[in-house]
Amino acid sequence: MPIKKWLPSRKALSAIGSIVGMFIIWEICCRAFNLPVYLLPAPSAVFAASYDSWPQLLGHLLATSRTVLYGFIASVVISIPLAMLIASSRIISEAIYPILVVTQAIPKIALAPILLVAFGAGETPRIIVTFLIAFFPLVASSVAGMLATPPELIELGRACRAGPLQEMLRIRLPFSVPFVFSGLRVAAALAVVGAVSAEFVGANAGLGFFIQSSMAYFRSPLAFSALVLLAMLGIVVFQAVNVIERLFFPWSANEGRS
Image 1 (spheres, one colour):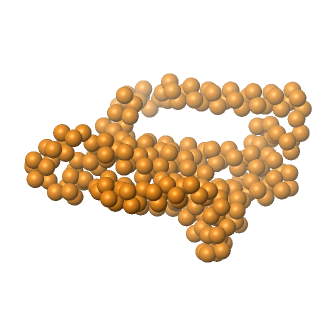
Image 2 (spheres, one colour):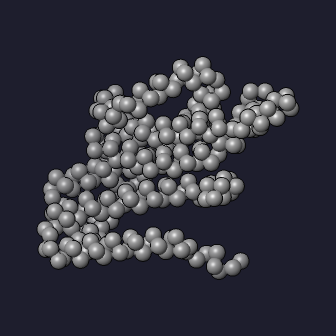
Image 3 (cartoon, one colour):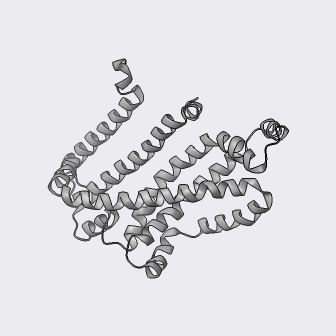
């Protein structure tokens, strides 16, 4: 197997160079303007705080990761069958889609206190908020993909006596895979946003809770450490979706890059 396959691509190297350059400029600006640490800590201060408090940060990272994972999985499990149901019937679509739009019009952060009262201060309210934020883009993109199936494929399936279920599973669903993964990438990013938003309202663990408690005592380097971890978590979840697409649906990944 050639070594070149395992080397970083030019795009990856460009991204890494941009991030490193951003940190260097950040460090220079903080030192040049002598900014207070509580206002804007330099990257060196952030990394030092991360090193000193890594066990605490790790515990909060695991709590947030668990919420993101459960909420994201719930959005996938519910969104795909719901999208199939909406795409299969105009009547069902007209009945369900307005309800979905209304649920998205409600700010999820406003639902968090209500869910906190209903389900207690455990992890369940945070998972529900994460799910509510992540699932709609996945439903919308999946429905768009299923409805965009070329009519000639539908006619061919019906000529072969394919029933409605076979038409959905063997024609519409495979055709919509690129659309589904496009929605999955958006949902992966929004799942992190949903988890942190819920942790701001009511939680005793998680990076959102850690940021809030750190800023209450003006411990800005620790808050920025949590922000860096949140960015890394979002990138990991996003790239995990890309890896799954390349492994199990390589034709979809190639189509998305073309």
